[in-house]
Length: 305
Ligand SMILES: *Cc1c(COP(=O)(O)O)cnc(C)c1O
Image (tube, rainbow, N blue to C red):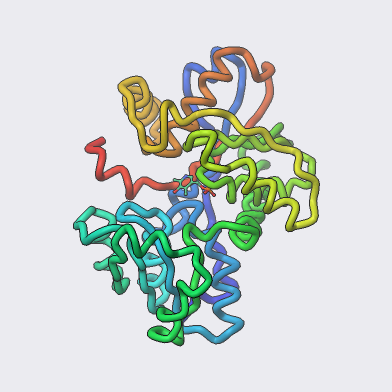
């Protein structure tokens, strides 16, 4: 069965305690999307929301999607399938590999097909889904990563989720958001929900030429809203999934001092970019910000952290 329409996962909002924040007089709370559920984790669940609604509308019995051997997207989809008991199929890039992620996908009951590199490159062709839809007529297809306007719309609820928790934190409001961006879909969802109110800072986990700016613009244009209210921050430190000693030390420190687990691809780089701006005095004393922990911790098993 697909998840019930009223299943709304909850992510706790917690104050962050780091010396670099207290020195600057800046307050940051973290929205723990890594803790929405014992099985399902991260922003990928929210990006799947509208696709699950669409699947329910067409009476599908499960979902089929694509990703790599470390994919947080496939991991969230397979976990949801296990959690709610619906069928999932994953089409994987490359050749069979036993990564920790792939072992989880199998343990969650996802049926896997390895497409090779050549086969995976064809995913944008018009007839790509035809044979898969013939083979799995009861499954609803979700594009790679769950991006686009549908993905962004599923993330709009994060704003209300934070607002509902402000009183418990003793905050009346906050200035804006800071989060990691890979395609910018999650950040675009926040921009949609904020409608020009609070600022959204998207820390890029990928280089400039990965097209985050045009894909965010496309989402906002398709939604019929202004292409504004957000800022892209270079944060990839030399490339997607490139790791350096300063980053690893920062991640270890954040876990030891602040009790915050991070991974090196997205959340570690995003929080380190935030520290750089806070330390450089880019944020006023007494300002308050929300950092979105987008999850991805399942992927850090490959990094021996
Ligand atoms: C996929 C992912 C992101 C990027 O999300 P986008 O919506 O593509 O920008 C950020 N953090 C983690 C942990 C992710 O898995």
